[in-house]
Amino acid sequence: MTTAAPSAPPALGPLLARGALLSPFKRPRPGVAFSGGRLTLPRLRVDLARLAAYERVCGFPTGDDALPITYPHVLGFPLAMRIMSGRAFPLPLLGLVHTSVSLTRHRPLPATGTYELLVHVDRLAPHRRGTEAVVVTELRQDGERVWESESAYLARHRTPGQEAGQAPPSSEGREGSEGSEGGEGGEGAEGPLPVVDEWRLGTDVGRRYGAVSGDRNPIHLSPLTARLLGFPRAIAHGMWTAARCLAAHGTPDAARVRADFRAPVLLPGTVAFAADGRRFELRGAGEEGRVHVRGRVEPVAPAG
Image (cartoon, rainbow, N blue to C red; front, side, top):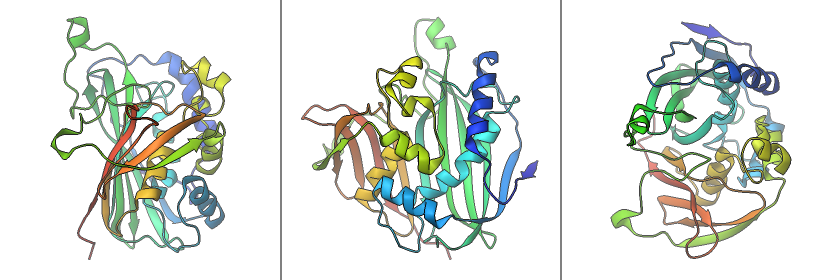
């Protein structure tokens, strides 16, 4: 069943508060299921001032009549939170970590266009460290799907493999998260990526991105609130790190992007951006810096 939402995204603050209040009453476990409804946002128009602020925070050029490839995720995130903060959703919102995102843009997306936005939880999948919720977001224009994404969010809990003394394989062979090492494996035969730039990140990165995205999760805002949730300092949003990398890397008009969030970026800090034209990484500064984000950009055949 698809439920229509108003012509503007819901406010994230009340949804995050509701999810936080309900989290202690949810007990994630192996084999949990969810068959929640789909949400759609018809006649969506982009707030151009908010878009420009997002572009500045993430490093995209401003003034172009085209949405950055990551921006529809920001538009769809409140609808995803409406679903995942609800009573029927079985995983606790507190502690849920973004493990990966894949984005496909079929053609340039005019910033002044009118769109239909659709969001649903596609499945709950077993992961070696718990259960992942896979959220699908679509952007359509005049009935044509012009952009789509899949985001995986991990709820950690004991699994049958852990109880037996061994870790079961995840649904897609991943183990990455904003809070732990993981991802799609090593560099393999493709070799290491050359460092292109080094970025010094201030303590305010999480607050600045939260202001333009609406995602004011406490782990991103200050050392105090981050420590309350188990982090030594505030950490950057996973989607900010992906957007900042893609702003530096560039993407074709029609492209598919995959990013795996492997380890948190503590704020403040210094990170190295590495890329080779299709692959990219964000890692700690220095020769043996820990990999925070690993991704790939591939061209796709344009729609139409």
